[in-house]
Length: 191
Image (cartoon, rainbow, N blue to C red):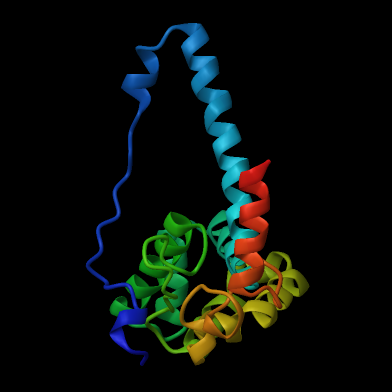
């Protein structure tokens, strides 16, 4: 397994936020405002995936397809049938929650990559045997092939977000240096 600094612990809390009562207390105009603001935040948040790492949008798309096809309890039954332990399935759920929470596979505070705390081959069996894969086999297989290796890779350059040889980012182009970024920022500040 990977170094623990790159793994989200299984005992991380995940909570459901029930805002129905608070929403009911809003006026019709406030409800519309809240609705449209949340939609804008949702779609704007998807851009973060494209600005984090090359694999982040693919991981997100893969997880979304899995959870649209099977709820977590159904996916759990499938995962256990594929040989995952309860702890490994919990690690998968924690990883998925981390991706959703951080809008990518790097911590939003600290820019450190996190990887699933279970063997890649086991996760691959779960994904490729899932209901999502049965419904759209080529799509799910292509997503897994695109992001599976990068999802688990802790090659030194991929451990942190950064420019050039210091890390990985899709916010800047691959050949952008810190000097380039400063030059661009100085220009933008002057405008």
